[in-house]
Image (cartoon, rainbow, N blue to C red; front, side):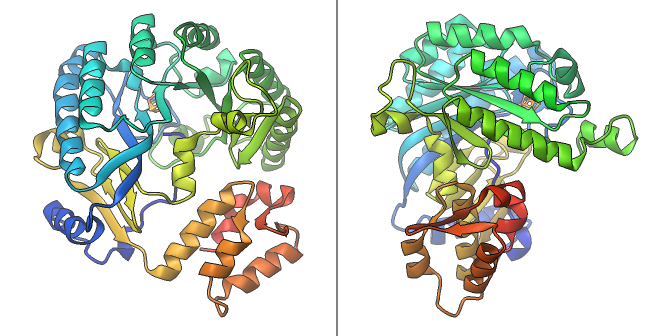
Length: 425
Ligand code: SF4
């Protein structure tokens, strides 16, 4: 998944229990009342050929024969989960995002099974954006043809960097050439939109190397770029290397210079910076009319917008998170438990108190560069809420800006966005 969301905080849970069936029951009694509508569906495929050094997504790197055997049972179990949820919510998504893991590792016959079932359930009837994540070296023409024929209109490719040296530091298993090959094949298959995931702040990376990555990425004419700074997550090989002194962090000021370079270069190349780490090609897919607003917005990731605007979204598969009307939960990140239970065990569950919920909405909305609508603030933030003063203070020190319609991050605020939005929680 390419979007960063607030971590679930189990200590806030009002029903935390070791027995997953308790939380499932509470969801049925509270979150699923009146069959709430779901606007986005996330499907987590937890298989990878190899574990990248920086990755903390739930994924299993295992020998391909074992993974292949498990895939069938996995897809059948996930379809049961989808059917179960379809009886509890109105599963009418406008966006589907299949992430992982490496979804392009799934066998084509299992993709067929998954897509047939989703279509039969009516889940795909309203879809305007259907994204599948793929690794550049694991994407075949047969799979792309199948996905294109079944309505997938966006592929998100994990490029990360175009430097062989930096890909090795990240412990990625692909080489730079495979990214260009994959983009060519995606276009040839007729899939309309291509996103490239990139990372900056990689140990050993210089400003010039970021410039080279930008040049290489732009030469492929992507419709969208997700460009994240490297995070040293606990329990990753990369963090162990850091602690052991085998690698060194990029200097903080240089990392900021890298971010500034990315912002300026992508603006010059005609990309709209619409979220802290995301850029959409202004003018839409190749051949689109630049002046056509409806086409322009087609390149924004609509699925991730569901997260940032706190819409209702459902995640299926081990470790997948969901949000419905202020209730959030996460499936246990454990394939054995997932395959072995009738309903997926829930690892975390919480219902945010209203004040905290408001803070989360504010925090997510501020990630979008258009900011929070003033109308929304006036309607939702009580007059005596201390966050009005915090907003005023952040405006005064130049981290936020108030326009006639929105409150949004300034350029200076962008560079310390986590700190700024964190004050409004
Ligand atoms: S391919 Fe993606 S999900 Fe798999 S280990 Fe690498 S970063 Fe993680």
